[in-house]
Length: 133
Image (cartoon, rainbow, N blue to C red; front, side):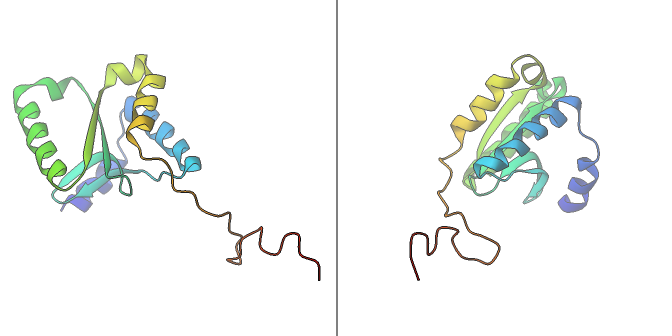
């Protein structure tokens, strides 16, 4: 059920979610892979980096309403029990302080793993460098 809901939601991003998604996709160059509107258990999160166990939510005004606030709080408890860290950003902060939002995300991510630069053949591009033969 959550997968079908997630598929439908991926087609309808708010302007703030679209901006955040564009910023998160740029982090792929640094070794981080984010998914948008991803199901985790019975919940659908806005964005998640599974390898870093980091969930990012873009919150609109409705999240300040008591019913939404309580549901988000419960969801946060469940996600934290599963080892996820959850960051919430208000849409207004994404609009006004986008660079700060992205810096907060970067600060929450672990250092990227260092991987050797591997060619399509599966060999390191440095393999055999400097050898004469």
